[in-house]
Length: 488
Image 1 (cartoon, rainbow, N blue to C red):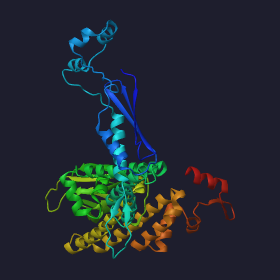
Image 2: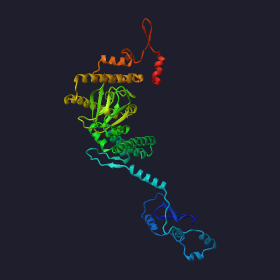
Image 3: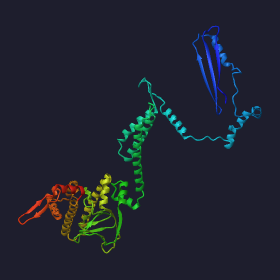
Image 4: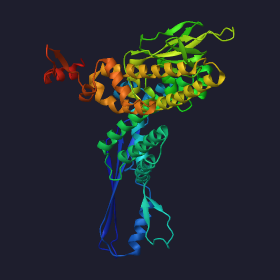
């Protein structure tokens, strides 16, 4: 290692110029075969002189004096140089590892150690220089005589807001989420490589959060679609025939929530007057409905059983009293029928699930509405085909069955007084669909042990009988408040 030395070169013009020029050259030799050259030229004002300019030009061409040039150190020393050197220098050279020896230890090839921080820093600087480089927009002069410049970072910022505006005009869920992710990604580039030179960390972090949320929702939808494609061919065919108004993902969720049960011909599925907590859907076969021993309905593949006003929006939890007996059909004309397969859902679980998915609830209501139409057409088919022996008695039992169904729905609503106010509009809609007048409504209330006044009040009145008259007592307010809080 050599100490720094300075070579000064002074050039003057003694004839025509009073000014002079100086050049200072400093050469510093550092470790590991590195050299750093610092050149400082001090030029003082001088008169224009051809002689001084010629002298300066000639001095640049002349090499430096030999005395000013010192030999440079070399790691590759010959044997003669090593033998003529002093003992101290030879001892120092023995302890020095030459690059050739180092390369021989590495198998003849020098392998640099990877430095990821330097690589990332170099990538960041390259992106910074590329995105923030001003570029001229080629506008015709008849549009504007001015020259406009723009950077790619600004283009990313404008693209982000344009994509957000486009996402507002889309209706598809996946397209909206994808455009939102793309717009937030463009905003990340704009906030990190900002034209002002500073990173805007506040919008940068918020956009990272938005990208994570939208990416999670996109991944969830893709997973649901993948699971929906795993349905059997029978279930997919069932959707095309009876649940075509329902999205395939919603249909897959509905099918996974239910359980399939099989019944032999003649088996009793639900008995008249029993409490039924399941909603069923016929996958295969036929079932017969009996009211007091009279066949009132024939349900086929694609019909619902015991939906209890769900088509009108009545989401009743728990069990509902059955208004008829449902039996697996044994066949007609002595021809045996096959097994009956139904898909059943627990009523409470299904209602809780429908509360969390509005689109599924709306699609299921549409499917149930078509089911009502199919049942009405099935009754007309029974009459036209001669399966009804006594039409008068059949009509009477069918009306009794409808009244009993409404009374069972009303009993379920009255057993949950906390939800009575929410069910009033839905119950009124059910009455309009099935033509239930006030007389039948009061009969159903009396069967449940309520009066029309109590139903309008929304709570049960306690009656105490005496010898002369019947006294009506209202419950205290604190009891009503406890009933609303604890659901009793």
